[in-house]
Image (cartoon, rainbow, N blue to C red; front, top):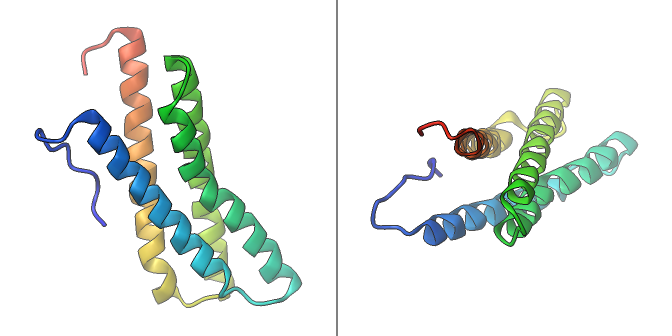
Length: 135
């Protein structure tokens, strides 16, 4: 998938729903990947790690969409970004260890990087708005 495109015909709510769908799809890909990890101590350790960190961004974004304040929204976006970065490290470890083939992981690593970029952009935009800086 490609980065979200700010389509002028899409409302902010439609863009938010599109991002939420991408995060859910990413979570499903992580769950599918976790089922392919070996049933060894290390394999199961990373299975649990990646399921937790890879599913958290979708859940946190869902919470963020119902945030009680701008600071609550910003905090949830920040935590989701941390989880995406943790997932990225877990994926790199899984790839380097050879638990799964690099080919199988390249697509999900790419999507992970794109989601990180989107969340960094959201966080920066929120910070600029808070400071009153032009976007």
